[in-house]
Each structure stands twice: as C-alpha cells, then as structure tokens.
Amino acid sequence: MNDYDETTAFLGKWGRFQQIVFFLLCVSTIPNGTGVLSIIFVAAIPSHHCMIPEHNLTQEWHNAIIPVKVVDGKQELSKCSRYKLDVVRNLSAQGLIPGRDVNLTDLEQEACLDGWSYSRDIYQSTIVSQFDLVCSDQWKQPFSSTIYFLGVLAGSFFTGQLSDRYGRKPVFFGTMAAQAIFTFLQVFSPSWTVFAILLFFSGLGQIGNYQSAFVLGSEILAGNVRVLFSTLGTCLCFAIGYMILPLLAFFFRDWKSLLLVITLPCLLYIPLWWFIPESPRWLLCRGRVEEAEAIVRDAAKKNKVEAPQIIFQHCTADEKKTCSGKEERLTILDLMRIKHIRIPSIILCYVWFTLVSGYFGLSLNSAQLSGNPYISCFISGAVEVPAYICCWLALQHLPRRLSVSFTAILGALSLFFIQLVPHTLPELAITLEMLGKYALTISTTLMFPYTAELYPTVIRSTATGLCGTFSRIGSSVAPFLFHLRTYSPYAPYIILGTLTLVAAFVTLFLPESFGHPLPETIDQMLKREKLKFPCITRKETPEPAVPLESRL
Image (tube, rainbow, N blue to C red; front, top):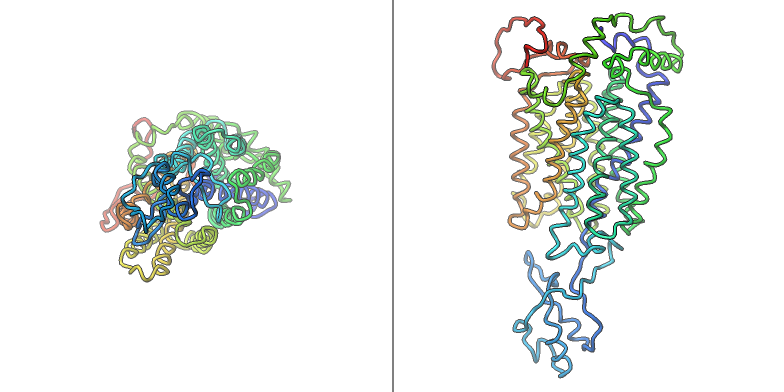
C-alpha cells in the first residue's frame, strides 16, 4: 500500500472534517486533566487530632489533653495519641492545673480510641476524614493514588490491544463511559475498600479514553496538524482541565460533590459517537477498504473537495493480505521477538517509566508547596501551558531525540539543585521544582508523538499501550516516592534526578522520526535510521526487505 498521507492528500490538512475531529478529540481530554489529578483534593489530609468525648473536663485540661510534639523544629499537636482519658478525667475532677500541678510528660498516653477530629478550614470532607485514613491506616492514603494508577496501568495494557483488534472508536467511547460510571459510583462507597475498587476501574477507563483519542487523532490528522493535535491540542486541553480542578475543588470542598462535578462532562460527551469517525488507517489494515473509502469520501464532502473515483486503487489483493494478514496479528510479544523493534521498545519503556514517575510525583506534591493547596495546584497546572507551547515549537523545528534528551537533562539538574537551596529561601526551592516540572512536562509530552511516529500502524496502538503500561508503573510508584521525605527531605529529588539523567542518555540511541511519514508496516519502519551510538558513525549497506518470520 502506498503512503496513506499521499493517497488522502486531496482532502487538505485543515478542512471542516479535520477541524471537527481535532476539536472534539481535544475537548475530550479536559475531563482527563480534572479526573487524573482530582486525587490531590479527594485524598487530601486535613489537620487532625484525637477526638475528645464530651466529659466533665475543665477548659485547661481540655486544651492540654493532646500532647505537643516537635516536628521539623516546630511544635504541633499529636495526630495519633492523647493523654489517657481516665487519668485526665480524675486529675480534672481534683481541680489540678496541667503544667503547674501536674507534669504532663509523666502522664501515660493512649491511641485515638474515639476517632479523630478533622479541621474544616481547607476541606469540608475528603476520603481521609470519611474513612479515617490516618495513623495506623495512613498507608491507605498514598495507596489510594497507587490503586488509581494501577487501574491506569491495566488500561494501558489492555485497551491498546483492544483498540488494535476492535477499532479506535469503540474503545474510545467505551472507556469514556466506564470512566464516568465508576467515578459516579465512588460517591456511594460505604467503605475505603469499595472506594478503592471503583477507583481502580475509573483509572482503567481514564487512560483508555485518552490513549484511544490520541491514536485516533494521530492516524486521521496529518502533517503539522498532527503535531498541533498531539501538543497544543490534547495536552493543552489536559492542562486546562488541570487548572480547572483547583477552581472546582475550591467551590466544592466536599469530595463527593467534587467527583459528581467531574463526572458530568464525560456523560455529555457520549452522544458525540455520531460525529467522530473510525480511523481509516486502521480499517485499511483490517482489510475493510470499503468502510475506509466511505469515511474518506464523507470527509471530502465536508471539506467540499472532489474525491477520486477509486481512492485506494493501489490496495491489490496481495497487499490486502499483507495488511490484514500476518502483520495484522502482531501482538505485544512481537515487540520483544522482532529484533529490530526489541531494543527501541526496551529503551522507550524505561524512558516512559522515568519521565511519568517524575511528572506525577511533582504534580501530586504540588499541594504541599505552600500553605494554599488551591493556588499551588493551579500554579503547577499553569506551568504546563508554556511547556506545551515550547513542545509544539520543538516538534515543528527540532529532532525528537535531541529535544527529549535536552529537556530531560534540564529537569534532572533542576531537581538536583533543590538540595543546595538553604531553608531560608523556600521560594527558590519552589521555583526549581516548578522548573523541573516544566522540563519533565515537555519531555513527557514529546514522547507521545515520538512513540507513535516510531511504530507502524499494524502495531502502533499495542506499542503505545506497552509504553503506557511502563509509564503507569512509574506513576503508581510516584505517590510513595515522595513519602521518602520522612527519612530524607531530598531523597525523592535525588532519585528522580538520577533516573532522569539516565533516561536522557539512553534516548540518544533511539531512531529519529522527525521528517518521516508514519510507517504503515514493519518494512517501512525498518527503512528509517538504524539504532546506533550517537558518537560513532559507520558506513552501512542497505538491508533488503525480508519476510517477517526471519526477523523474529
């Protein structure tokens, strides 16, 4: 089959058909921006201490019953203990004054047997206050984020293969419906266990929706419009959703109300099934030439251009067999079995793991940067806007490989320098962390089109699903990574910086895709620049095309 972009060039690149697809797919990522990071507010930890039942305690003992501890050089009330209530009640009845008549350090302490009292100064309610995810159950708070990203991981693994088998469009709308339904059901969770199960399936739907939309747009759009879609399109709309999140959370400070508001846009989007077409590239590779031609002719009608009488006349019987036969049945295992794809796939999986773990680690940590989590989260989202603009410019004018490597190095150095900032300059530390977030956002965004451009249509969605799987392993680790600050405040930054430096180096060994059309088959992928060390050049003889079986 000849190049799809050349065959459909008569449509133009920015007609009414492309505009509809571009706008609808981009807008679909706004709920992703609000949904993915809603856990920042849904699982936020309010200030809390042991609840004191209504007993006949004097005001002095009521104020003193919670022990005072020193944390990071500051005094604060204990969150998980109180002085033994029976002892305090007897001392209060005797009229003794704490600190004067009684040495508080000599009193026995006990756990929060009557539950906890949570501050409502910032949050009216979160799952932490709803299900008491504190003290001995504190591990459930970061694990909630991990469960969500494990759902995203499962979705990355399965939806890519489902999309390659059953089509981009059914998976796109099916996972969007799943995302809306399971997010809505979370509101009625009677326990944390039920909430966690529903959260897992919500994450599965979220990534399936985003991944299918990205692949669908990449295959329908062409040229600079494709680059615009994958950067200033989907990613900028994701950032808009990210910035809308703290605004919604500010007005809806109860976690249930916030989830209901986030669910609504997904439900409104489902009727648009009749406006978004299936990918003609995918239909051709399934041998469904008539359906692909029907979509292209409808696109020509919308763009007010005349289509040729036979659009895909070059798709002979033998070529249809090639497109829909052996290579059609490629699976995720073929990414490891085919030797020319194996090493790039391994490198891409590591780079995705590292960059996404850094991106989500810094994003989830945004609420801890200042005293106002809503402003901090908004700033963290706003940083992504110039990052996506720079990414768009880089994709138009710069090689993919060097762009990813350079921005990854910038992000790593920013994280390393945080540990050199004195405690008297917290603003500088925040600036460096936001610079790291800015650089990692660029490099992560560049990886989306870069990965899609490296693989052929017959296995593109499966390959992006595999890379997405490793990226979600990184995002699953991210919530616990920043909990290492309990042992060392700089441990998360040192670990992320080191992993990112290694990612910047190994990226240089990937093939370059800048200026090349999207490959349709394995043979077209192999015609690109071969994997080689960046500092070593050698003359290579052309390699003739060989059957797929001989490359395994």
